[in-house]
Image 1: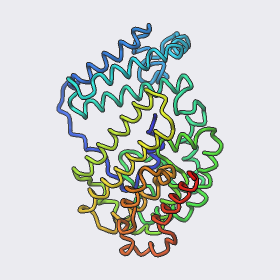
Image 2: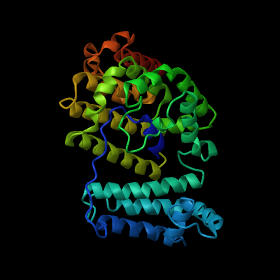
Image 3: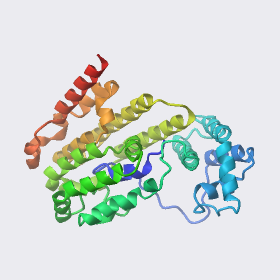
Image 4: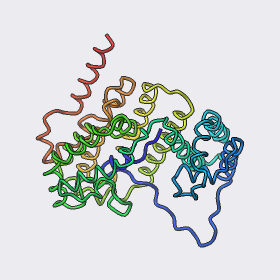
Length: 365
């Protein structure tokens, strides 16, 4: 299961960021033994099928990571024929190291797991299987979405912001830019919806990636109602505490484990969403508690409401997470009494969730 590109677009507002990288001393980088052992075992799976890993990576990345071999088409065909041999071998070698020497360090194992799962995801996509629809429109999705921003008079980099930009600044980093975004949001979202509609399989894939376009629109409405609170909170949310970073670390690791599990078995959509949504709701609760003592209550409340509203509809309807969700996404956590624009929000999220549960219950009768 591939989670990346559209989660970037999601860019959960004022979200906890990733751990700040420590400056590395000069000299060769020491690769942990866990990574070395895992790579060696992984490579043997491809070598045993008659392929060197450099050629495999050249084919999987279209020559961007390794040189494209001259017999690339032949290698592609053979890899796809042998996928049922190679992929289980790679997953077995990975799982044999989980929680064991030399991979007792969880972060090192997750680094190895991410590397191998990304390779297998690209492998599946090349062979036309897995979650990613093998189509040109999917490859062009980011560019096409950015064209919608251009048509609406917005900076296209707002859709896929660079790392150097303010984290979570999805409406922009100033009051003027946020006002411009909110003023054209209707035409922007209509354009984006047309892009999604025109690409077969895109909506399902984006949902699996954690981006629900309908929910995102609802979340953006919340931000635009209180854009001043959004702007005032941006700088504070650039400084995640150790607790915030740990929330993100655990969530990312669990999502990565889910990707591995999904690659290794015929997981039903119901089972996938049950696990996926549980991770998302746990992250919401952890994040709320971690940011609470750090930033202004109004800004944290706005962030909380945005994240609750952008939760995919599948998760909002899922019975197994309703107890946690009703508690996490309750109105007191939104601090609406401190936000001037919140009075115009006509329907509370908690009411929406209750309605969703009622619909779900009727479906079961």
